[in-house]
Image (cartoon, rainbow, N blue to C red; front, side, top):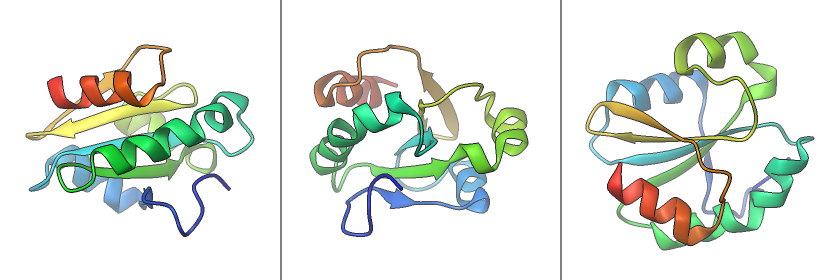
Amino acid sequence: DLWDKDSKVVEVSKDGMISLKEGTDKPSVAVVYAPWCQFCQAMEEQYEGLASELSGSFDVVKFRGDEEREFISENFDVKSFPTILVAKDGKMTKYDSEERTVEAMKAFAESA
């Protein structure tokens, strides 16, 4: 799997994803991923860096979408991996850029 147990990236359940969508006290960045996906694997280090950069101001989480395709498609309009979502003030915004650097993802999260 990506982002092992020593990671700052926290795994969430289906209920956890629904909670993000409904709104929480703290903004969050969520990646919907598949461990076999080469693009997910390629962004692993940068996403971990994002978790470090945003520590304290955002929760940075992961959800394994390949095992829950119908749920993730119906509830979050996720069609491919990785998909990055920012949950803030009860609104979810999809990160559409292919630029998956710490700086780009952080700027998007803070402006969403």
